[in-house]
Length: 266
Ligand SMILES: [Zn+2]
Ligand SMILES: [Zn+2]
Figure (cartoon, rainbow, N blue to C red):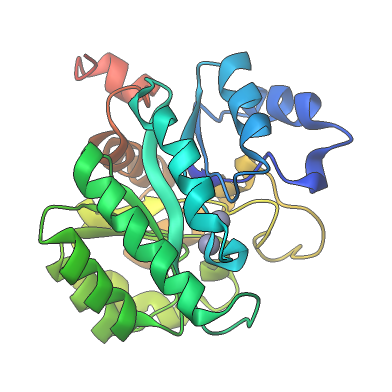
């Protein structure tokens, strides 16, 4: 199974990064989208994708890292967008829930990354916390209807899900779904399953019941179990569909056994 949103380049893995990668692939993970959060940490992202072809990178700067110098840092990273290992731009967006970076800097950085996704044709990984109206506005203005992607670790309600789907964006479900599954019923009832992606956002958001401690890619199976139960599906079927959705969005480099067996691989 593919984890569509991981941060194995963060310091939480500095002590055992290689062992984590090996263990998680041994546990049934078949692909990882390693989502870059800052220019400073790009070298570690780069090392991860070079070490294992099953790991794919995004190029981007997180809203929490927004600063007056971040735009110039983004320009320096853009060159990597043409590489085979790079499957998306982001994560980017707006976060007014945590006050880690000035909103002005977040807006400028988000607009630049929407533009980068539009110019490169890469999908966009969006982080949106308590800022849906403005995120949609910037996306519409800078994307001009030509950018696709995912609202990762979706935090909105039914109305935001409608707005997201109307823009042809997928909805990424992370461990948070396991904390209060009932809240997700109306959203899952509304959304076509083609719009769903599954992710960990590790090292954060380890699924229930054991929420404490560091998250890892293989915990995405737990989120899959809970979502499958809500959808009244077999977990295997949901995993197969979610992997297919991931490959459709991020490209055929995200290989999985299901795709290989159905001959969809390029
Ligand atoms: Zn995020
Ligand atoms: Zn993230």
